[in-house]
Image 1 (cartoon, rainbow, N blue to C red):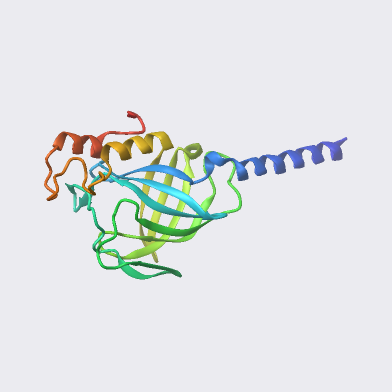
Image 2: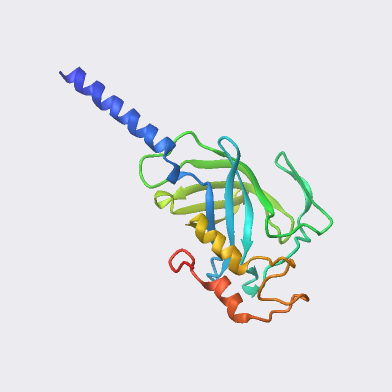
Length: 218
């Protein structure tokens, strides 16, 4: 009887582990609201996807503000400092300064771990590369979903030095609404600016850069 009970418990644990391993809510795929730690301003909505099984990359779905040394600016339209290079094996070329920031792929080939640990954390994503569009430098990338997939920690680092941010998940429907409200128009300008890049609708820019789209959705 003891041996029988042991076998049942053993297979229950294995089955539970497999559930954690394949539950989609723990995966990084999807849309995330990125905020600046110091100002609490919205920086962008990020879209994370799988270019191939068990690897994720990320694009800027819609920029919401640009934070430099604690000051808040409207986001860049073209990524003039992205440049080109080889980020730990990933070749990229954004030279010429004509690549739009909205839609920019800036993180590549981050490998998903095999299993989630039981609890509220998802699998560890590691050995990726991430580009800082403001200065053209790239770093190693590590990420892990938290709080049952509602939040994700994203760490960019080089050696012992690095920075971790925490993003919050958005639904695809909400991400599309944010893009329609705040993203580039058909004229490739942000809806709160004129064609010269001057801010002409501060109220709209404030909504795009400060509204908590997770707790106060459109």
